[in-house]
Length: 326
Ligand SMILES: NC(=O)c1ccc[n+]([C@@H]2O[C@H](COP(=O)([O-])OP(=O)(O)OC[C@H]3O[C@@H](n4cnc5c(N)ncnc54)[C@H](OP(=O)(O)O)[C@@H]3O)[C@@H](O)[C@H]2O)c1
Image (cartoon, rainbow, N blue to C red; front, side):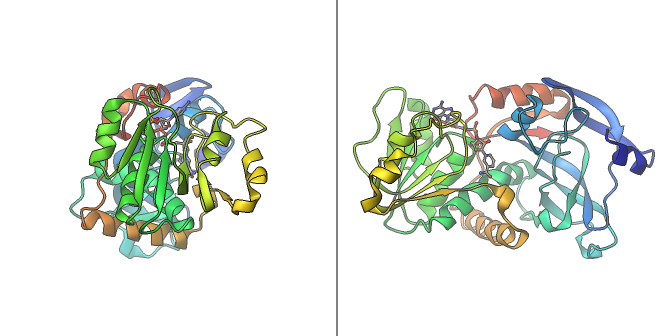
């Protein structure tokens, strides 16, 4: 608990999973957070577990406040209190909220500008399984203007972001190729809209080129994937599940400059509230039109938060790992 949090402690306690020291996560009684003037308090029904939380536990995420803090960047629940600058109409609404950590708990505070209405009929776990991953996938495809007729390649397609990028690219009318890691994942991804599938454990890279490549993996073989761009192609790097790229990875961009390739790097951290809100509206529309569905890998109770983090760290999930406080 930081100094400022203890000053705001009003005596009400809740369960929260705290990173007690690097590598250690413990579920403890913690003070209920109090919203600041521009924030809301959310009573949580479902919590998304992401790779960022794994990095926070390892002490490798620079934006995480450190030992004694609670991970968790996405929750779905009901707004139960609001700061003085927040419209009172938000109180009582069911919403997706993106706190600056603190989500692995029964309650969390988030800036009101990062709270988005949950579709009334959707299950809380489904909404949180869309959450950050759908925003990354949707905004990545939007920023590279992936459109009908484009050939789109998704790397890391079986991951949390990838299963949504596959569906959203298909919904935008693109012809989607996925790279994934098993025959079973290939079949799941076909059912979600992939026209072509590559099992990277059994097959070489595709022998065709693409208008758009969405990459959540990076890693030492990023350069080989850059070479799969066709003239005027757009490559958007939005994750590093395979580790850091090697120093030569960007060489194809220079070598192939006559093909006018474009490399985008994309992080949700740099996206303002209006762009987030517009993207969330497009996501909810796709959901309502049954052109997008949440994919949940496994659900855990908050008390087993360490096992949920381990599931993500082991790299086995197909879709989203979700925690429930109760
Ligand atoms: N840009 C942003 O704002 C933002 C936001 C959230 C997360 N991220 C980052 O995006 C990345 C992906 O997130 P996620 O939630 O989708 O992760 P995830 O659920 O763990 O999925 C990552 C996928 O990448 C593939 N993969 C992992 N290691 C690989 C390797 N060595 N070589 C090739 N493929 C590999 C696997 O897919 P297959 O089994 O299908 O091959 C895996 O399922 C992470 O680095 C995360 O930190 C970025």
